[in-house]
Image (cartoon, rainbow, N blue to C red; front, top):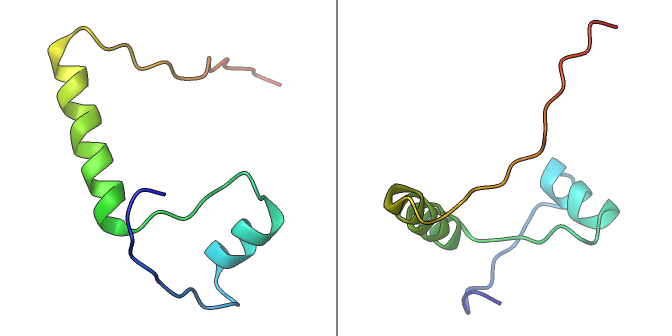
Length: 61
């Protein structure tokens, strides 16, 4: 848990469907999402933090 905020999500929204069908996904409030994004950008700017992204392979098939 990142914060104590309790929110509601419409049952018919795409976000609610994704959370129901994929339990590994979690919901994060906008403030926590923005805070984590800002801290990550700060760590990337230091040069000591490596941001590992998946390997993208261009396939002409």
